[in-house]
Image 1: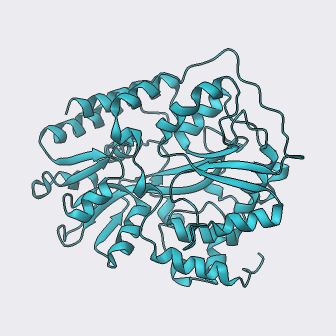
Image 2: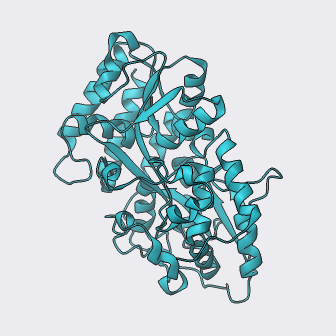
Image 3: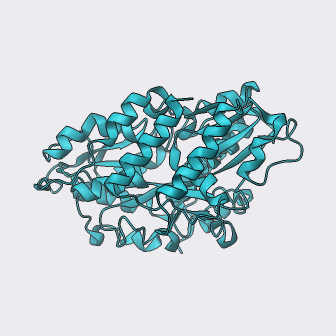
Length: 405
């Protein structure tokens, strides 16, 4: 392991990271929350196609530029709104990177680019970070280029737990960017006894003050796990899914929920409109940082939480694939990964980042939401990859539940 560079900029950046007040998922104004119609419409495009698009020719040898599309507030940023690690990459590589905050939601982003993807055309992104389930669809449809691992030697630093997802066992098309958990959060003053299971949210004292996520794999997944279902396995189907939907529907009709929504749940927690709910891990840390106290707690339910990742992809129409691979390789340097993780408050997929950050901010080393140990990881599961029929059916069922509430 190389020693962490004695770079005052890196040290200042990590200190800044600990005082920031928002996270990548805190600012999503996603289509899932804004419009069920858009979400339902987006189910349809995932069909088998006979003619897969052909990958564009790589011009990286002569074109020293690229575009990186990502979610809001998902990269280290200084007080001047610059991206220090990205600037370092540009200096080292000679490649100019246009950083485009274009992904506000998996579904809405896909809706914007799907027609160009189907034709193998440029989508104004040479790499884009999307969530596991969407990544699986791109790979299946031939919308992602096969990566040249020779250009990404630092892929050897990838955490073993993330090396063989069922949608891309060899990581031939995708490389994790950041990961996180879905679990339970509560206001310590309002819920002094805390929460242990999803069913604790159904307590009469919490009626009308509970939130859940409109990213249904997380909300439904947590309920299914409490029913004893291994969501990462293939032994479940419609029966188990619909049982979880029935439970949620009952509590929607009973008025237990304030809302099932996207990231506006953070604002509701701050304003006291809700006091408990199903949430994403990184948001709790940043919410407490904003408030300057440990007002909110987060726990993975005893029956298990979900683990998701957002992943680098190179779209089929990109002509700068090698440039993108060099970028990915750069962010798999342990000290660079540590800097980013400290800023975004999510799990780094890079082995060695924990040791790197110990030299700057040792208080972060034991933070289970950034550097989870084996015991923590044993409590979470990745929602299994669905086939196209299941994806459409379950998405439509969940949205139908919301529309019928």
